[in-house]
Length: 259
Image (cartoon, rainbow, N blue to C red):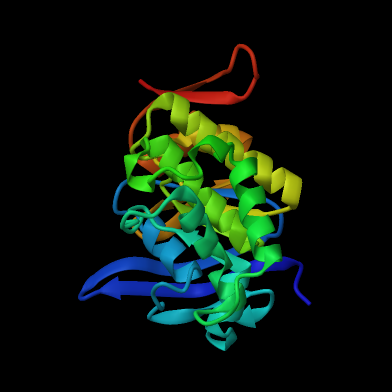
């Protein structure tokens, strides 16, 4: 049995004649938070969609728990892996509680009975994401940060061991960015969840992720602990612009800035 939860071998993906991903080899261990960073168009969201089984690679193999994704039944995979796209689908008048309850679908199916255990997991997820006061609110009426917490609550109710998040902070202000990523970090540490998150801001990745994977033009240009990635030379290699780095005056973690 592999010690890695997710393994990608020689993943290739193109749209027409345009190469999106080329020769991606990657191993992701259980219980860690991985940040995918890189310029726009570098292939971050495409890579996440391939891991989430939303699209198939042109070639190469993705394994989850040592088994190729093609060998996973849909419901079994959904019980293990939860995916939140960059643009979440419309909630059509749903309340927070109704949205979170959808996380139980892989466990009981369309015609299955919603049990007391299901209800308990939904209420626990709502409580853990501090949404008790919003449980009966229409999701569409909430702020962006509150909506993101509702989607994370749905993923918690799903009881998956792996969360895949595509730019969960892209439309949020600084306060809500910190709130959402702090919540994800706490959940990973509490429950041993594996998280793969696409982020635009490398400083957020450095602060909240255990490991950073940098893509550029469809290939992995660098990966490592935040301290390894957050150097002027590495950041220039990844983003193609001059950046400086200093130590955070309170937390002592590396922080980058444009020169």
